[in-house]
Image 1 (tube, rainbow, N blue to C red):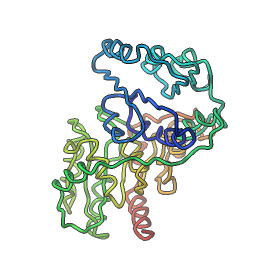
Image 2: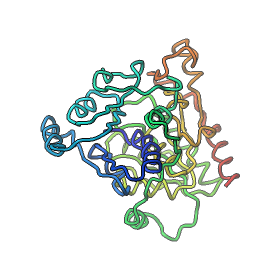
Image 3: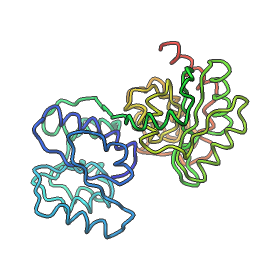
Image 4: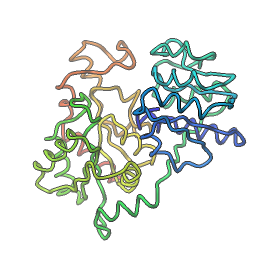
Length: 339
């Protein structure tokens, strides 16, 4: 229903169902914005829930589902909104999370529960427990489509004849006024300059259209000796997907583009100190993660990873400053050396 990262985490579930149950009709109830990420996926009926409509959105959904019946509902989002929506989905089996993880009273809205191998899993693995419940072998495939139209549109915004390898930096985690997952602008600028001057890469900044994201991009741009291309606020979601697919490497904190890049099999250097990359890092590129989460837990909360709640976040402005530019540039060079 929300969060582009979680949409990508759900794709291996979809691919597992499609491979094992090829004759099954699949309906995905999805948020209006998130739909733009997956609208080109074939073999799925999408029902869009527009939360901006408030209570009217539930009435619209109810009308869309009137007279329909489903064998199975996979209730995969832990939120009161998703649980309220599940109430309108007539299904024999309503499969939700185990009670230990069923936050926001989700367990009240399901009649079956997954049986996790562990409660300390990556989000992708926890989602795949929904297919394991039915004895299906998980498929670790994303197959996120890239729009040809978006590629063409994006190329008009870039130099079509430029043959440089692309480094895409998505500096902000979310559009909120402050997010502890963000790295500092000085670090991003230092890495961007290194990539341009030492590695001969073309650096592109990307992100949403919020004032904060645009201000952060402008600050990074002003510090760079080798000026990057600033596309922050200038790409649609489809164009963002195309850009991340074209990239040689992506650098980002714990945010949607990190996981979109992972879904596209584009190497992504994840910057993690405020959140646990074992739970929410780029699934296929854990070896590229800069991981200061254990150090931050110890410093700010006097906890080890084993002792902390699995979803523990660190809300401290200093935690991401533990990441040093030379750690990132070292990872970046290693990716290029192996390509």
